[in-house]
Structures are given as C-alpha cells and as structure tokens.
Image (cartoon, rainbow, N blue to C red; front, side, top):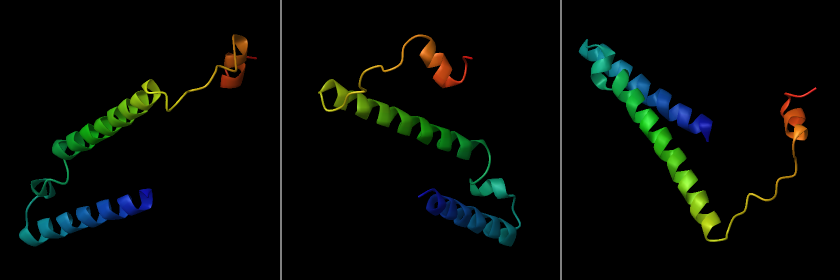
Length: 85
C-alpha cells in the first residue's frame, strides 16, 4: 500500500515539476511544495489518528473490543522495555 501511495505522490510531483518547467514558473506556484502541502498532510495524519482512536474507543465502549489484562507488573515492565538490568 505504501509503495502505491508513494508512486502516486511521485507521479503528481513529477507532473507539477514538468508543468512548472514548461511554463517557466517556480514549482511552489503549483501548490505541491511549501507550507500549504505540509499543512494538509499534517491535518490528514492528525485526522486519521483521531478517527482510528475514536473508532476503537467506541468499539471498546460498546463491548466489542478489549485491551486484555496486564500481564507484566513492576520491574518486569522495565526489564522487557529494555530499561532494567
């Protein structure tokens, strides 16, 4: 899935670069580079994270999902996390 999305991104950027070169304009005029694109990307990432969090939370509230029980306690958590000796 990542490879497909990366291919689409490269195709869009390639087309924008080609058009900018043909029109002898800066690439950022095309809207593919700069702060606007990164703002949209960050908004999409945040929205996706919030959406998945709300979805799993609602499924859990209605009894369809459980995180299970805690199997490690005390220093075992640190040891398995790599922080203990």
